[in-house]
Length: 391
Image (cartoon, rainbow, N blue to C red; front, side, top):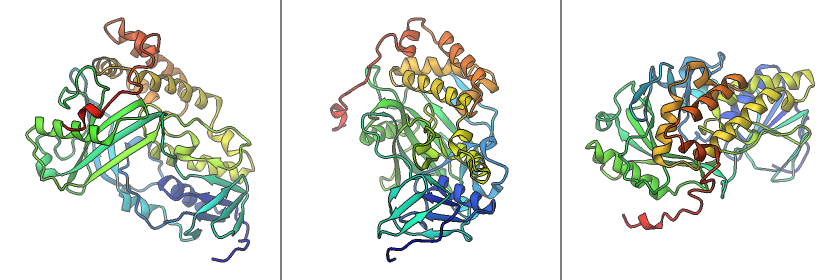
């Protein structure tokens, strides 16, 4: 590709992960001209994506769901069945449901991304009515982080822990080999709909996250506790990304969207379903000639984000026992209150209620001081994991 000016599109989307592809697809469906830029646009996305089924927009077909879980389980002090259908998304199904046949897709890297101008690696320049930056987030460094290590296990072997149609969203049972003086983590385990189950030890909210070797050690300990012995050649998946990316401000250049645009949930690490649901809001703002950032981020939505960040700070300083007590308190909340934390983009009243009640119901009483940051504010900062490296 030689350096030149391309015809000016209505929208330029930089980054074709599932969020960027959905945004570009919906822009095309809305009748806008679209240029999409990604170094590897045909690559099938590596991570596993999951969400609550009611979070998915109506324009996505059922074929995007690889595995449906009617009532997933959360283990705190006891087992809680959540009567809210959950799913693992099909990456081939998503790809097929988000075609870009009528868009111009450029397999290259963007070097400059501004409000209305994108420069490509060879000097080609794109001037667009609106530019969306959906490239995801860089390595978190010392930021509040989600870290996970997943091992893919044949469903037949995994059956003692997770059967067909079952799922463990948060398993806090004391089976990962971590002691009371070590940072907490929980197990996430769901069938993928392809004959495999992913077992993923997960840490949320620690500054800098938890090393993969430690998460793998804990995953293997859990599997061994249920008599699951692996061959040793099972594929694995790693996740390590920041949770504290704030919503953008208006007038700051290209419109960040998806995880780069504050849609990464600070308390759960989920972003894809929320981004899908907000794609049409962003595109309608472009069509109307208004600011997409203002359309996406109302004062109520920004307040919800701020409150969720308070929850993230609390998560990152709790012990395992305190985490169990806190989640036990949270899962006694009403369905609306739970959804206000887990999903709803701007239900600030219900979110304020559930945050208050969660703190009030966390027991013993003194643990609430850690949860709100009055004590042990910097617990786990610079924790030394090297002591476990030889185990």
